[in-house]
Amino acid sequence: MLEPKQVDFEELSERLRELERRHGLSTIDFYRRYRGGELGDGEEMILWAGLYHLYLTSLPVRQFMIGPCPAARPLASTSPESSVASVVVLPSRPSESPFYA
Image (cartoon, rainbow, N blue to C red; front, top):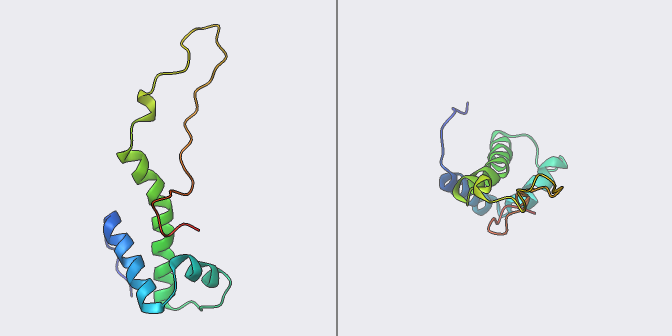
């Protein structure tokens, strides 16, 4: 049985790379095949899918936390007559990540 364990982002990335080396698949290819039912539902496959899900959901949050604070950016206009809105868009697929398709 798997026990819960806290891991930092670097350890999470390393665990994904280790699974890739062990199985000879990229995490992206693994996940496509796993979702297609090609790889079964063994404990390690479930763990790999869970780690990948954690990676996908934590990377944007991590980038947001270490990047410049969007709330500190000035609005384009502070005039009450202005209809300009300020919107912050976070990248959905960070270029630095090897685990995004």
